Length: 335
Image (cartoon, rainbow, N blue to C red; front, side, top):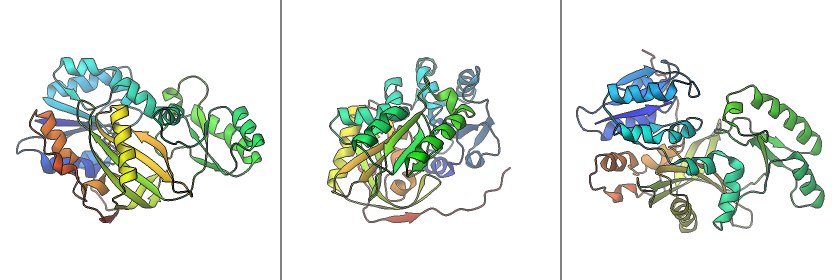
């Protein structure tokens, strides 16, 4: 059984985790726009492909699936998820399992304004969120929200374009600058309409990353909670697995209500009053997954069992608590 990872980028750890759990003779195939992408160096087969928004991108991936007898496809990039989700029937017609959630799920997670509204609709807390500059200024004048604020692209990935705003002058300046930046990047293609930016209240407190794991039918089967201890470039750099039933339950509620498939990367902040606020949803493996895997959460093995239509050992999704890990850079030879 061969598995394809698209937009592999720097996720070397994830490809290694799957390789550790594949049977002898099974292969990892990985694609990226650049053959020098780090993750491609640990794949059994590495292939260069066009940009995600290229007209022939999906056909290229489908051809790869046929040529390399691919059983399942995983996407590791937010911008690619909507493209693959829209074309899921074509993959299914080839007998390929596309481990990407359906379009309605992707739309909720990819549009950060929709994310906040959806979180509130299921009875959970989200940051106060605005898409119009006038609306946030009105809220500031009424005392409904106060500085500092966060500003970021409405449709985005990771911490790209994230700005901290401390006063009205910065609000105007950064809004104009960020709008210009977005229009010059691939995020403009990913965006819908002309409301490219969201502005949110800036929360401070303990931050948690969750791996919310659903089966291929969209039913929740596990949650791993990690407290973030250090961040770097928008990703978790140091974390510890924790046993917090209230946060675990938030993850379960989200998993059952959203109905995603595979892994959902969730960010949660604990407010000063002790309540929890859901910040983001990312329906893919996130940068914090290694902290779950190294603590015993073997989701790759369970996913392989599901792809093979074998009985899954869900006990593999239980983390060991109190396990602290930190990321450490190393050099990788590009061949």
